[in-house]
Length: 83
Image 1: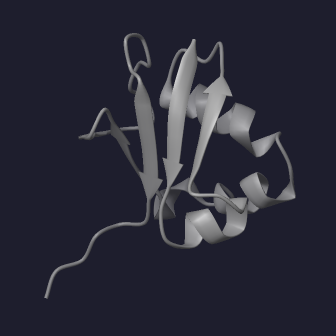
Image 2: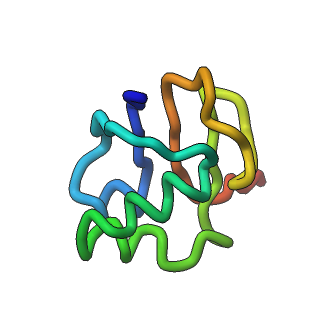
């Protein structure tokens, strides 16, 4: 499947881009993250500690165990804070 993967804030800085199109066979977000880590040093650094990363699938918050079937866009970003 083809996914648009978006990176925000420090994830974008580590990966080196804010968006990329990814061909994947991943079944879940966790599987996708494992594939992305293997792409290189920047991706590995971005996903070194997934406790500091949140994910949205087609603009809906999701967990790393969420299935990717039918998803078109995956966004990764740091936790949001309010004030």
